[in-house]
Length: 351
Image (cartoon, rainbow, N blue to C red):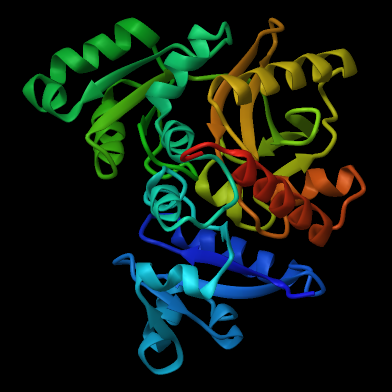
């Protein structure tokens, strides 16, 4: 039987392109070769597509890969993509990757793909819209406010006082559309507000300010099935830092993760899974997603960061929770591909 050509799209135009490289490389390594033919597709920093050989996938960074593209890779146009692959496994992260942009291109080309559709992917990147939808669905989210770059530049002193009056300190500033904790600052006093705003405004022109949460952080992968969305195990997150920073997420030894959690009671874990599935449905996610949140000392369950995709590095939540469910990496990747194919076969119009 002819194998399905699976294009593994990695790299990309965002601040998370190195994370994407790790994800795509791991998917490539664990793809079931009996069923699928992997086609590694590197998106360069300008959005160009290149079909690359294995020796480039094994390069250390996206910059290393980029330096070899002209000599060792094959450039293809967007229009040629459907001649090269039958299915797209999106291992891109961040802007232009899991925010609806690449999903829209694949819809136009008629290529099925992993993850949510255009609208839900865009919502999955926009923290402000997420909170509005989740609150409307009856889910608990952190207290927050948005400050535009224009408002900040117009009156920094007034905005600083507004933040102090609304949240007190510490609080958190973050870009409204970034991932991997990029641009996030723990603001400990009024003196830190300007730096927090500056860090966030490097990545977006809207800044989300949130209350600081002192609780147990969790993450849960959800994957679609015949009986609807199914949550995998929960992971309890214990970072070294005061919040879950980029280094805590990706540097070895910087964070402890417990799957299943050590400090969340069983009945609470059941309640968290119900809230996670409720959030997944409210945001219209499809195929799979990752829902993050906090279990607070007063018993509240807050949904803080719904993601329409997930990192796919070997130590990611995706594979840790799959292992807890008894699935090898190749098994959960195959399930995700087949679930996604079924969703696209049954859709009417764009996903």
